[in-house]
Amino acid sequence: MRLLVCSEKDAASVNIRSKLLALAEWREGEPFEGKPTYSNADVKLIIIDQEHLYRDNLDESAASFFGEKPEVIVYLSRHRSESGLRSLTVHPIGNHRQADFGGKPRTLVPSAPAHMTGALRALKETAKGLDYTVSFEATHHGPFLKTPTFFIEAGSDETAWSDDKAGEALANAVFKATAARGRVGIGVGGGHYMPRITDVALSRDVCFGHMIPSYVLDEFDETILENALSQTANAEFVYFHRKAISKPMLRRLEDWFAGRGIKVVREDDLPPLRQAETQKD
Image (cartoon, rainbow, N blue to C red; front, top):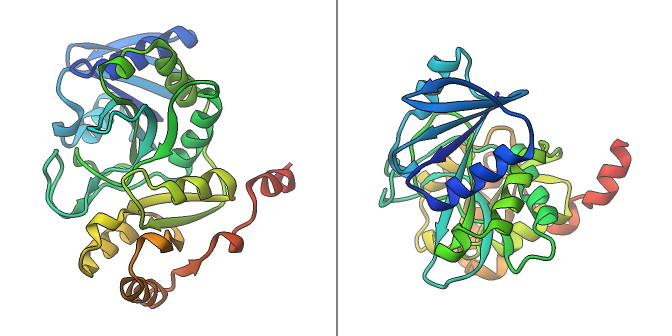
């Protein structure tokens, strides 16, 4: 079961939900916490009246309600940024350091590399022609869950949250995305939007789980690295945005991951996505 979560307190979430329900025939089911539920094949959609970020353990409540555990949870959400960048993004969740916006301090939620990378690629297609940047974001914010989870978002202000075209692009990406294949890795370095990691995910046959931005690497912190590794199931490699990391820090990071059997790769080490897809066919 793929579980989609809409918050009624989030304008973008409501927008994406309305576009999703218009895409196909959904069966309305028994209410979850007083709100209607919808299903289409293995996809379930629930509605909550709290802010996404602060509703911990929703996966347990949903599993009890539906009688099965979700394979992956996808939150439909807004993204806010002071830069005003028009963006459509996906990202894993949890807190590398303090918990300023939900979740628990220094605690990550299991990532969903195949589903999240598949959603990024689908979003790149469905958003063609729109004046939005499509990208990953680094791991950040709550809620706390024990199930593989990612957010898919419209940003960065009210005009984007209510934009029908953006809502349609996000809804189509959520509905049509398939789990990506390829080796699983962790991305390290870069700004909040993880530009190099995004480029690699869109061009190479890989799936990214947790992502650590440069701004949390002001000091070497093994807990941050251990959390990213333990909450990215089947991680085989780490990819660094090298220009965004100091050389002394990069050497320490490379040694740390290599010492745990995680291969340090460059882009040329990874097979092109188109080639990989052709081979699968």
